[in-house]
Image (cartoon, rainbow, N blue to C red; front, side):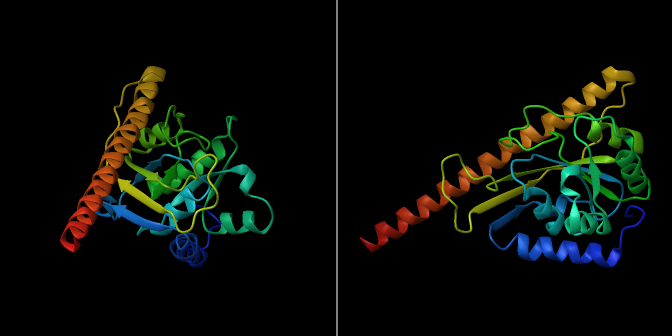
Length: 226
């Protein structure tokens, strides 16, 4: 379930690096990680607000994952390592079918492919989405698994933070509509975007309620001490 030329051993090493060294600078809370199917063809779609989003997700998943990564990252030793752990280079803004075909082979073997539908980093709000994720899922007959992150992006004007809190919420797997032609692909792409936007709202409510609960507990403690 890895692209041709990838090393299963180095893939496991890469996941360990993501789960250990990339994750350590953050206080990560995973919500509903049990929603990730243990097997079967899955296109994981995520919002993208920081360079570490991909490595974090790669390390926290409990199964092998192949991510579409911007081509500029595939230079020098890092590029060699990314290819050997099974990641696929994508030229943004270009009609490059080579990585899509490689991702399709992974999906048809029952693997998981990770895509950031926005195509580049943003504020994480998923204001738009590219067609790649929807095309892959529909063509391979794969389900789409939405996941959203909050906290990896440093707010504008803020200095470096010490172990900031990061929340990751996995949604339920969904099957995209199978309408034909360009209109069908557009509708499927919009559903991908909508799933992520709604999941972001759910995460924001979940994190907000958690903060409210902590404030209430703090008030109770202060009241008891008084």
